[in-house]
Structure formats: structure tokens, C-alpha cells
Amino acid sequence: MTAAHTPQPEPGDRPVGMVVDGVETQAQVDGRLVEETLLPALSAMATRPRSRRRAFAFLVGPPGVGKSTLAAAVAHSARRGQPEPLEVAALGIDGFHHPNAYLSTHHLRTDTGSVRLSAVKGAPETFDVASLTQHVQALAAGRDVVWPTYDRSIHDVVPGTEPVSAGVVLLEGNWLLLDEPGWRDLATYADYVIYLTADPELLRERLIRRKVRGGLSPAAAADFYESSDRLNVERVIAASDLSKVDLVLNVQADGTINQGELR
Image (cartoon, rainbow, N blue to C red; front, side, top):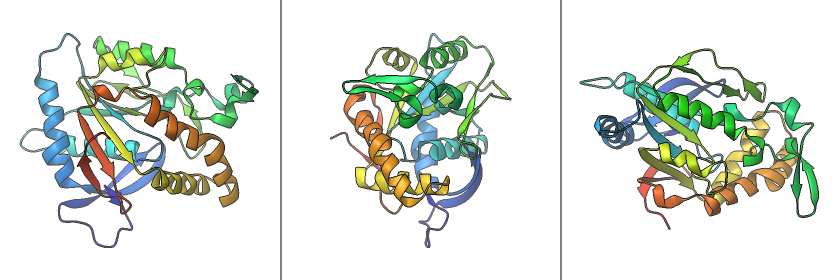
């Protein structure tokens, strides 16, 4: 997957229009990665015997690495798959952020005092993990669930509008492998786990650009990275239970994605 402005896409890449987090996105999808690696893995996962009604693949990685875009691209390609399409619901956990009204009035206790949750938005403590767990449990039981989303155009959560009925769920998020109370039990639902990662300096550049596109000045975006995004990147890498990972993908500076190994 490479950005739409990449001058010379690799053979097998294709431009795909999609909406990611409420924003229209043109992405250059690595067709070989999707069709030769990810879709066969999801298809095999979907056919294995399981006790739950739905199969779950988790796409996990630090912020800024491109999880939402890759998940949307996989679901898009799965629907067009040959010879048989695969019904995949690409879902993110960002819709389970507490709303901005909550974040601005609640605080996180730290070793040095307390900080308003809005100042560390994206940290695990800014999510309603209990609601996320309830929604995953309902999906696993086979019920159709209305899934909330996060809209980057308004920088807040919005209620879901469509029930999730697909038999395969590709769930993406920073904290799905977090080995901490309230989060670690989520991994028991994963039938297949993909870990998408990148060099921290590349993530820094991406996250600052994202905030600038969202309306912050470059200086304010850099400040937010240091006070919040950087801590989340480090926490994902240090506190995720990577023993559950089945496939490692590394994002390169030019946007291409290579298979890799855990370090």
C-alpha cells in the first residue's frame, strides 16, 4: 500500500478509492500482498473449525502505520475476489474512544499528578474498552451489531449506522494485543493476528503530517506528538503481547509493505 502520489507504483498495485475514518482516501494497494498473502490467510482462517459464529483477524500496530487504510483495502479486494468473493467487515476500535465531551472533563492520574484525557487522546485510557468488548462478544455470538466509528473530519466518535453482518471480521487497532487489564482478554477472540509496524521515525513524520492535515500548525502537531503520540507508539511496541502474532508486515519509507519478523 503506497500513497496515491507515489510516482511509479510497483506492478500489481492499483488505485482504490475508499472512505477511511470519515475521510475520502485514494490509496495505491499492493495487489500481490493482498491477493497472495492476506486474502488467502483470511480465507483459510474462515474455513477452520471454531466455536464462535464469526472468524476474527486482528490487525495491530502503532499509530500512524496505516492500519485503517490497509484494512479497508483488504475488505474492498475481498468483495471483488476471484473465483469467490469473501465477505469481510473491516472495523476499527477508534469508534470506542470516549467522546470529546467526556475526554475534556475527565482526567488520568499519573505519577506526577493528573492530566486531562483530551491531552492524551489515543492512549488506552481514553477508550471505552468495556463497550468494545461487549460489541466483540456480540459479533462472536453471531448477532448483527451496529458498530461506532471515528470521523477524522470532526475529530470525534459517531454512532454506527450499518449492522455488521459479514462472517469474517478484520478488526484493527493500536491496543488489541495490549497486555494490560481490560484489554488482554480481547486477544482470545483472534483467529489470526497481523502486526503492522514501521520505523519509529517514519511514524513520527506520518503522525505529525496527520495532525497538520487535521488543522494543527506544524509546531502544535510536533508538540502533540511528543506529549501523546510518541508515548502511544512506544507503548504499543513495548506492551503488546506479540507472542500471538501470525504475520509481521513492515511499512517502508516509500509506503511499500514487506513481510518481516519480530525483533
